[in-house]
Length: 402
Image (tube, rainbow, N blue to C red; front, side, top):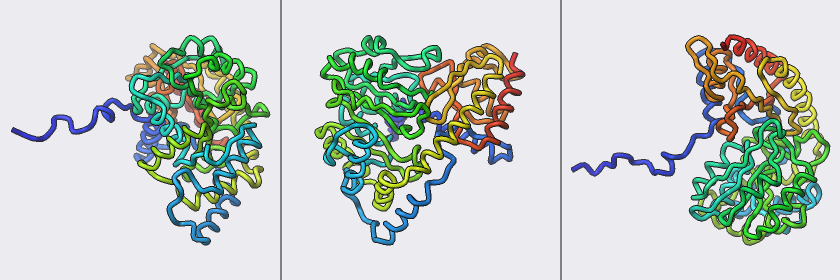
């Protein structure tokens, strides 16, 4: 009798969905490697370089010998800078024992899910949501409970929808603002209204993902953690990837109740321990030094948003809103479901994106991965030249669908 298992992999990994953004980015790279001229608008990564003063701070840290292990929750210097940033930008009051630095904001969210969820616990997700939210919740044994808002709501859920979704099994509510994938931004008044329906449920925490905070086109950013009724039950997650163009540095952080921060540190200590030392030194410098490069990137993204919306609105059947943050547009393309382009049948957003990659050589991401079956995501973190060329190709490709 053979001792080899029929299926050696765990049920966890077999049931886990692959990240759709990573999958589409890889498909774009594979097609490009075959010699095709591919424009990849699938990945959520600024096309700018990390500002020079931040890179210089990292170089200095290396020269100064910051090459050793760090405390699991982060260097004191960085946690103090994060405390100051939260106070300065968000009206949030923390001490350094309430801060945990991680290897990206994604790890911060995973730490929180593992720290808070028991099997069967529910997590309310504002949909459309970032692709990893649902899978992280499921990996931690929780049950994702999506609350969906379509383009007619500017992709923003209402307090009534949140109230209806909360049950005695709800452990936390998780959302991003500015939002990935839609770019929608919740105003202070909208967050106060949502907080009002969460506040009476004392067993429910709020996880606010604010990684796109500095790419906000409406002038001011609002944090739900500053709303008095839920401030003691809110965990605010942020990082350096988007606003500082530091994706490859893998640095994120959270601020929240001290007992939750300690739990996240305990979990992280068994997975990765502390984030890299010289990167943390540079990150502290980034938070407390010249922000002008971040604002310049934001302004450039705003120009690209206007360019893309103007072009996309000209494509018949596309429904496009005007996102107030991040660097994404999330058109509703359900008009094309049930059409065909030669040998390709477009029955859903997955088919639509694969059609665009094959026929237009433009990489995008299906809305199905974000909990929005009628939409697809375009990242405009690309040059104006490539954006014009890509949307021109998209228009030409969809004109062949019948």
